[in-house]
Image 1 (cartoon, rainbow, N blue to C red):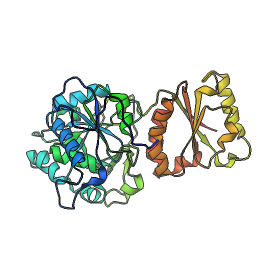
Image 2: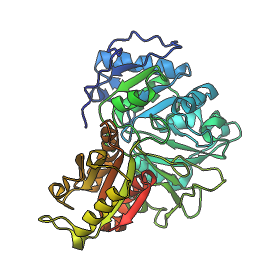
Image 3: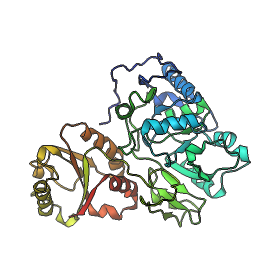
Image 4: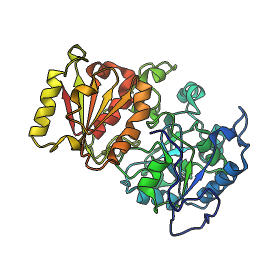
Amino acid sequence: MSSSNFSPQKSSSSNELSPDTKSFETQILKVNPNSITFSSHQLFPTISDPQSLKNLQLAAHLIKHNKIVGFPTETVYGLGGSSLSDSAVTSIYKAKNRPADNPLITHISSIDQLKRLILSKDNLEIPDIYLPLIQKYWPGPLTILLPVGPNSPISKLTTNGLSTFAVRMPSNPIARALIALSDTPIAAPSANSSTKPSPTLASHVYHDLNNKIPLIIDGGPSNIGLESTVIDGLSTPPVLLRPGGLSVNQIKNINGFENLIIAKPNANSKDPVKTPGMKYKHYSPSAKVSLLYLNKNSINFSQPIQSLSNYLSNNLANNFSTNSSNLALIYQDNILNPNNYSSYFNQTKVLGKDINQMQHNLFALFRELDDIPNINQIIVILDSNIKNNLEAMALLNRLNKAASIKIDL
């Protein structure tokens, strides 16, 4: 699940790709993240591996010429293009088949770059409320909303014409190096087909976007596995717009964010959304997903849990799935003994022991099961107590968006 030894046919580890290529025979080029270092006051990275430097320079050339590139971040793989270019942003929407009213997050390599290339055009500064937050969590999986000035160079297609834009500084050294070498703010949603699980490996990007983009940088698996946390500090009190790689408690521990409130996405609202993940269906595998919560008191490792067995039997009887070869199980570790249910499932997968593991594994497991022939339903089983855990908000947000059935057993 976490292998990075992906080498599809027609890919290359050399720089044979033309930056001006029009017909996309998608190439995959490896970059070693351990070869990249940023010092505390360094705007541009030191890259010790010559091949990694060469591959990043090619990717940066593409970005500077308004092309789009798949690349790793610490959250998930992104599909990046200049956030200042209508042409690049249009290419992103087209490659993903993404609704054009779903704004994109701009990625920067440094605060200097943010100020120099964007904010200085309107003599703007980062609002004071954000300063302790970004001092603590940038670079990292934190996105903030900033005002769009009248002279802002950011494409209106990036922001969907809103008065704010979303921005973050990734901590993944490959992502940050690409942005620095191109010296271009990069608009980058997840590098997947719209509505599908976000990619955490280069192979996931290739699966969805082969022949749609010229280049994918393979930097190994994403560390976090879920997208960034998005905060609107321009509102009073501040609002969490999308849970993600930083937990609610981590945000609330910062001065000025103690009274953080949590936005409730409304898929039926006609109002424009401020950030990705608030409106449209997301994160869904091709297989139907059912999310089941087990009461901890019913957990039994020696015998099948009656409520679960009843549900599975009825599930089969009601033709949600015709037989066990169509069903897959993803379960929270230590909540059940999968051997008690082997007759129901073609595949059983452990989601993880703790929140971090479960977040990291979720999308990769969805994609792994989607690649197995005949699997048309995935049942995810969690301890019902997880719903009271603020640390699990991002995980449950993604599962609730993916699942068409949610049941407490």
